[in-house]
Image (tube, rainbow, N blue to C red; front, side):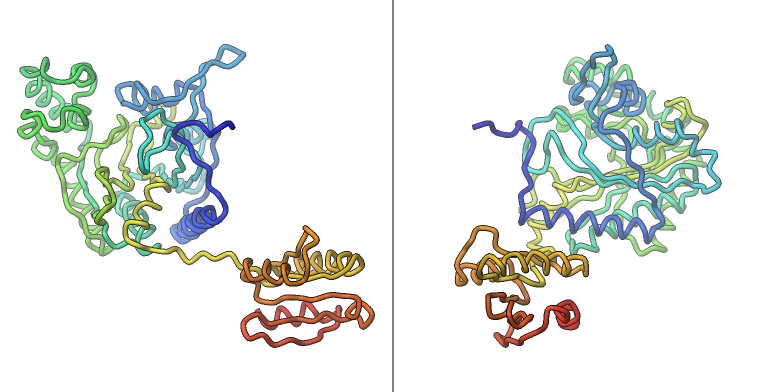
Length: 421
């Protein structure tokens, strides 16, 4: 027997309906917020992620699935969605489109070589939105509100929104110098990754999982102490808009997103549900002014977020929330005899063309077994066809909710069913 690869999963009937429900919810919300879908390739030139995500990140250094194709090109299965969207934005010159900002959404599989654990797979599915072309703090608040609204729309209550600012370029440079001065005396005590990060991107030291309990982390310089007046004002405006939208949040100056392209607003949404697990983050995002330029595009501000569907399902389970999904047929046809089987196929086709969900037996079961199959499918009505019904040009229709039966002519089946469902 060949099993699936480690870190992947099969989503079987009974579970896949939950995924479909969440996809519909996400797409409906995107429509309400006026975000339009963009679909990018599952693999890109590796350079897209090296330049877009940042070569000091764990994603680029350790987690990417990279391969060389037959044309000797280095390609990578996408580990996240933002860099691909930014690449498409540049390539197709969406910055010149009359509609600005470009409000885009995506959903699909991403790939990271990580140690598999609950809610963290090597192939996982992300929902994400990106707003490119606006530096208005109002759209930062809109993106954050969108994320919170999505979680709340499926019933989650144990949520915590954590907010921070990473400041503008001047703020980050001042903070960077302070971090280098702070961590250099204890550099040899940090992990090998952080020793490299201290040289290239010291902000990433604050996000280290290995050194999070090191004594130096407790007294590390906070970005809020190095903000320019413009950065402070921008952050205050974001918070005012969130207040106006009724979005509750807490400010955490230690929040650092794990990708190099973030600046100004950064946020994460946590689950505080009991039993959810040690890794509480459900989703995260922030502003990434400079990413489009890194991919050879014009100066373009942007903000977005992404969430893992796997972790969303974990949060729903932790709060005991059952999604309103059901598998139910409108009709099940019980056919007895070869001629009746033939007629049933034609009736099924007509019903399906009328948007009525219908099925029948394909295993030659007896009548009693066919009725059991109808019960398992939660069919609302059972249509019975035998020799007598064929002679009379009728079907017996049984209402499974109350057990009543009526005879209906072949021509009237569709209207009869539609009136009752």
